[in-house]
Length: 410
Ligand SMILES: *Cc1c(COP(=O)(O)O)cnc(C)c1O
Image (cartoon, rainbow, N blue to C red; front, top):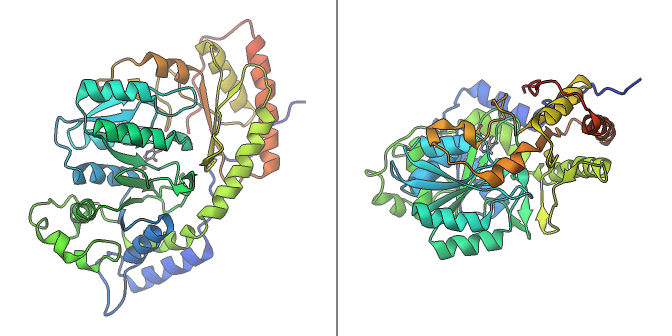
């Protein structure tokens, strides 16, 4: 009888008790708005910003309503204008081109390599061809490119870099926290990421003017002096009447839930790494499967796992995904014709009028993706890997392929 996995790929850990207690206190006093404080009280949101800035070693931090709002705020702070080209990797998720489009700017996509990071040769060509001044670099699924090479190239091309760290909160490259290489780093605290407040975002920078613009953009009215991880009032003086209010603040309830989670990031990274490496061991040497290399200097957060089925025809990949689903293993396939659940790819984002990217198409055609929530135990991962190895072998040998069952939705 074949084994079946019964766990949930979307079940995260509960909010820590300290976060629940802090949230209850906020609910009891009722001052949820970040600028609604009593007497000498310091808002949870302001404290969260101060503590997260310290955690990643940034001068300034701003809490926002979502990761997408953080990216859009970053682009506005950099004064991207309607119609401006903004570069981004083609392998990312919909909030990234969406943030660009929310300004009326134009996403210009860059090819992805087989190690799932941005193709530097193509980045240079796209930067020159488009005249873009900004790269919104998405560390998609936690794969961090060679940050020294990326930053050296961007400096040479005059590109400002905004890092989308939705999948790299808590990760490091050569000891430097993800989000600290570019002009601005953006994070998401949405439930499926690395700290969980349902929805939420954080933005960090060392640039005082960018920080002041971001605070004003978020909707600080004239209360920016209440921030603790923002520049002094003199920086706001020349900007406060120039920068529009694009309301996207975080509230004290979410901040209260998040504050105790900052100190858990390192431990979570270590536990995610264990799951990731167990999966890597389980799939190593399985014929037909190509694993993604992880550089030694990349201190990654393995909250999801990707592998390639290179050269597989779509019907064979679809058969594999369906067979895994029938045994309780939820996979996402980036090569599917139609977007499914959370998974879409660049060609689906019609508003961005994407040009075909043959290299990316080749990689995504065989790219399989799976969540590894911390509620999994290493034994769960071993079981999942056994199921995948068996189903890869079966699908690789199949001679009769049904005309494509859709991959499972989230
Ligand atoms: C989740 C995510 C974001 C931000 O998403 P929000 O839901 O707006 O917080 C940004 N980029 C990627 C790649 C993501 O997966």
